[in-house]
Length: 221
View 1 (cartoon, rainbow, N blue to C red):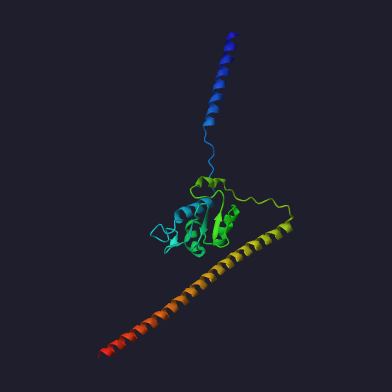
View 2 (view 1 turned 90 degrees about the vertical axis):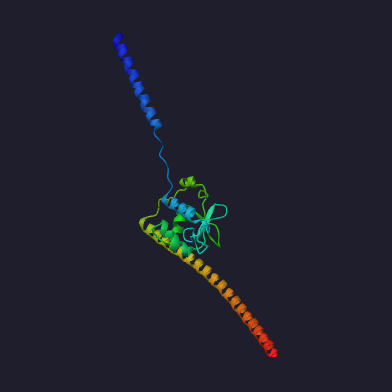
């Protein structure tokens, strides 16, 4: 009887040790590491690699062409600015994404909660997207679409409205870009007029100088 009691006691000890070892092994397993969405990582890399403006002698590598900025962080690093959408689409986007569509890039920003914060600049901000704080990217989540409560025919209509809204948004972006180009063209025309006026004054001055110099020579002879 004593042997049976001893055997049961030993069995209990062995089971307890196995359970303890299993528990210890489970506790040593590393937790699952969260990683940010590829779009966010690529956009962050884009800014880190191209956002220093004219800090490099190579225009395209430094985010600028001939000293002109294309994209950069804003002054306090809480957002970023696309200074030249046309060159950003042509030169920068294809290096990080499989397209060169500025409107598609903006729609992606919207799906992650970024906001356009300036009416005059293509400046975008998100409270978790900041210079020097890459670790916060994992806290940015894609907006979830609420489940539809409409029947099929209403859902189809809703999708058409959504498509129309996207087209309207693209149209507004194009109109704003067109207005920016018109304003730049007007500024260039004003500068050209100033240069022409300066050219006329210089020619008049040169003509007056040459005439005066010619008269002096005639008087000498």
